[in-house]
Image 1 (cartoon, rainbow, N blue to C red):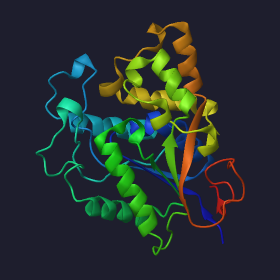
Image 2: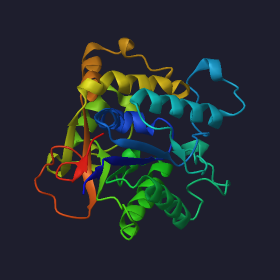
Image 3: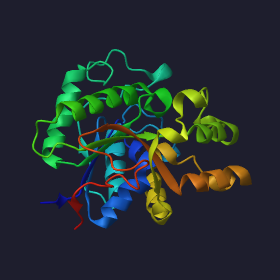
Image 4: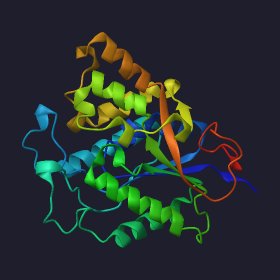
Amino acid sequence: MSKVASLLAVFAHPDDEAFSSGGTLAHYAALGARVVVACATRGEAGQIKDPALQGVSDLGKVREEELARACAALGLEPPVFLGFHDSGRNERLRKDDPLTTINVDLWEIERRIKEVIASVKPQVMITFDPHGGYLHPDHLVIHRAATAAFFSSGYLEGAPERLFYTVWPIEVVAQMQALRPNLAAGLEPQMVGVSESTLAVRMAIADQAEKKRAAIRAHSSQTADQNMSDLPPEAQAFMERMFSYETFALGGVRGPVLRWPLKHLFDGLDVQWR
């Protein structure tokens, strides 16, 4: 008997969900799927881009509320927080905090993700690719922990049947470097991007673009300084294309994949929509 479609997205910080897969999450929520975002940290080590928040005493609380608003904008359930701390990166790397994801035992993060899997019972999971998008330390840890949780959760009732990674095609990374250098500084397109043959799903999300934009705006502490109208026309056109589709690679399966590429994340799975 088919079950109601359910999707679990596991990320590191508030805003990871909006940029990487916001349109896809909104698409499935609109179809009637249960869609849950599990966030490892509250993003308390992030940079503050909103001048109105300079000097805020609890950035983690601000970003927790932003993620709740972003999930609401996408039509999702309230987010689940795993309870770990933001590691920061580069000069902000928090090496001495025992609760940052880079310091916590990886088994503990995997165990917490499996608790969420047991509760949500998703047929599909989404998380970071092996490069963590752009090599952020927390992204790399959550990639490893979420992938491990997918593979070790097979004994659970309602274990996920597919694991997908959020990815960028090589040419997108190259274009990003040319048109928005600040978004891809120092990245090698052939290293962090993937070939077209690696893409399992290209999701058309133009009809959910406004929800994705609303979710990004909800993360104002991180995005307040981003104004597309200030970009050159070619860069604006590129960013518009980025709001028309999202791409995924296949990280793991339990069962056959009937075609390649897949039409969508649930393609071939026996699910029903509310």
